[in-house]
Structures are given as structure tokens and as C-alpha cells.
Length: 197
View (cartoon, rainbow, N blue to C red):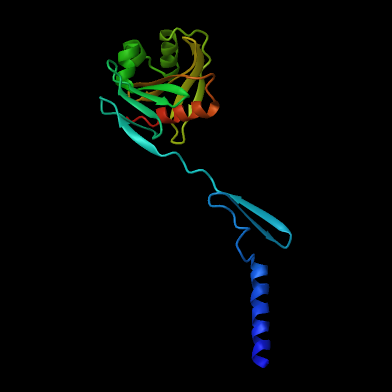
């Protein structure tokens, strides 16, 4: 009789413990979702952050290099100019030009512009864009870029220049679908800023 009573009490304690702890785990958050904890009437929600995009390094024929998101499509080196031809899927084509490729495309007047605004004005003129109001982008490393967007050949296009040793590197990126978003513009400019030398 005493043994049965003790066993009954032990089972009751275990049952109460399972109820207090949630027992079957039905309240657990799914993997990769939000975890919510409630204590003394206070609810706290923690949401996991997206991981930074993985980068890959590409090299120009001149030996200069650049880092770009690994999920961009690479078409390799431009057939005649030595540019790196990339694409952001369903967003934009991105033609990156180091100083050598930029000079090949835009000529010695671009390379010898003498200032970033001069190089920007030269690039805009060669692209057939007038009345350009260039904006300044400064990368995390402190590199300054002048850029603008305009409709070129029917597509919203980003073009930009940055100093690269004694000359200028550049990028030209026409949209594949509508206006380029601010995030897309910032990403492309960040890639241009990574060109070394």
C-alpha cells in the first residue's frame, strides 16, 4: 500500500513537470524562424539576420582586381576593351572597367581628365548624356565615386567613375527591368570602389 502511494505521488510529480515545461515541445519555434520567450508577462522576440552576401574576386587583363557578389553572373572579359562583363540576375548588366579598359573605351581625354568631375563630364558626353548632375558616393574605405543615372538606349542606366592611380576606373550598368533601386545602385558602386589598383 505504501509502495503504491509513493509510486502514485512520483507519477503525479512527473506529470506536473511535463505540463509546466510544455511536455511534447509543441511550442518550440521552427528552425530559422523567430524565437519568442515570455517571462513575467514580458514578450521578447529575436529574429535572425540575413548573412552578408558572399564575395568573389575577379581579375582584369591589366592585373587589376575587383570583388563582386558571388551570385552575379560573370561573362568574363570584354572581347575588345578588357572590361569585366557581369550581370545581376533579372536586375542589371554591369560592365566594370579598370583604368586601362576605361581609357580604351573613352580615350586619352578621359584618362587625362585631371579630376574626378572632369572624368565624369567626359564619360557623360561620350555616352550622349547632357545636363548631368553627378552625386558623390563614399565607400566604407573612404574611396570617392561620382555617379549619375540616366535613360540610355531606353534603359535606366548607372554610370560612375573613381580615381585609380593616375587615371580613372568606371562602371556602366543598364537596368534589365525598370528603374534601378537605391540598394542596387549602392551595391554596384561598392563593387566599383573595390577595384585595385
